[in-house]
Image 1 (tube, rainbow, N blue to C red):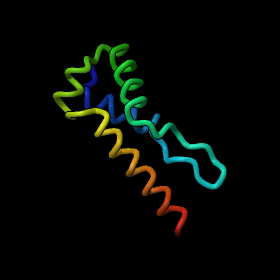
Image 2 (cartoon, rainbow, N blue to C red):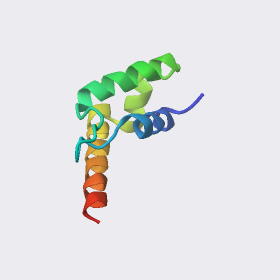
Image 3 (tube, helix red, strand yellow):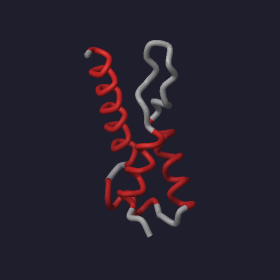
Image 4 (cartoon, helix red, strand yellow):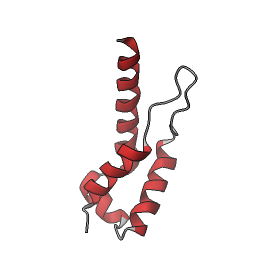
Length: 80
């Protein structure tokens, strides 16, 4: 069984994207909504919300940080 951190990081890599810029649609920027989706998918893979919380702390805050990173990386990419 995949660990909670590995699952969440894989899910984020495939589900969390930079916000819309230059007419291209970005992913949802609602960290709470994304956390709910991630938890639902994790449960379907046999990973409990408690396991996620134990490994990562508050999932919403974790995702919020990943969103910020994605948005910053996209902004930096566009500036270069």
